[in-house]
Image (cartoon, rainbow, N blue to C red; front, side, top):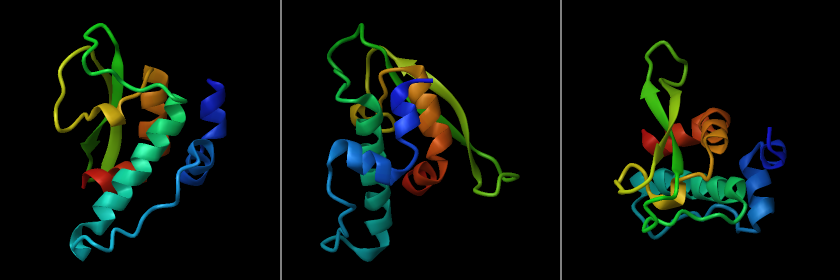
Length: 124
């Protein structure tokens, strides 16, 4: 297990590692979409912390970019479960923004499992 995984267990750990400010309130946005943007901010900070400065280069078709994938599961208490980690070399989609990609399958899998509830708030 990588050293970064050992040090990033919570969103608060990610904030400390990235020196990013706490979650904005997004008060200028309609109230019904604020929670989505708060969840997105948290996932972005966690991704940045786990990647330790690495950023996906969407123009590099030889670069592996990993991301967690989820599936719905009515038998799960949260209704969502981590499914797997996938890799893209090229292309982009709205579901896999470069800011949400990881530099390794280990990090994508860890994020998907460790931060499942945050991803649920972001996705659902």
